[in-house]
Image (cartoon, rainbow, N blue to C red; front, top):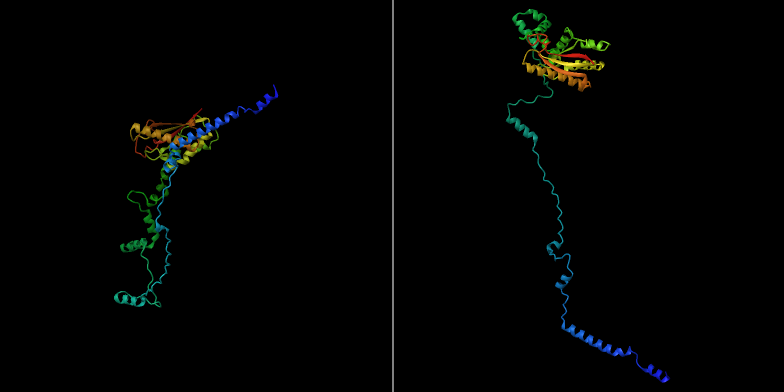
Length: 326
């Protein structure tokens, strides 16, 4: 290649330069078309309704109406001045009292201070004893007047219609029911063919099957036709519980018996309930094991006295403690 040809190549335009003018013309035409489209297309204005559609509000604030009277300052409170109370005029007591006394002339006047109020000594009314002596003097019974103590003793020894002395009726044993318990205890202690509870506690050796049954009259333990234990029976039951504790090799059978009054079924049930009451008390209060004591009622099947009054059949109403060795 010659130098002339190289020079021509350097003077000819490049391929990039040839596209500049067509690209510029195309850009002008494109922008002109875009401008023409923008003029023909309406643009929606950003109004309140459009904004709420695009960006919804989470809450709305409404305009509050405030009463103008509430905004006015409160007037200052007036200070209250305490009024002095009116003077009260009290009535004159002396003229009023004199006027009242003049209206009641029959009322006696008060005694003077320098005079004695008590002019006579007080007298006591005649006692019952004195009245009795006065009556005796009128009737001519001089012996009673000569010895008042004899009259008092005679009044105490006087018996009522029932035949019992007054001192017997007022005895503590009669009022509390201890006489019944005392009678029952004596009957159980003196009955032949039975063991005495105090004697068994006093002996040193163990009990055997040959030991006679222990008699406990139900008049000592229960009320008549009742199965609840008397308070007077607790001492005897405690002795029985102590005897059971001392003889662990023996089993004690509690047998209930009744008199002839009442039907067979009633007496059988009553005697069983009484035996159960004694057993339950020993287990609950003396902590006796249940297998150490048994209870059985026999009613009126084992009478000691065949008949008679309630007092005569007292021995029939009994609880026997039968001792059985293991």
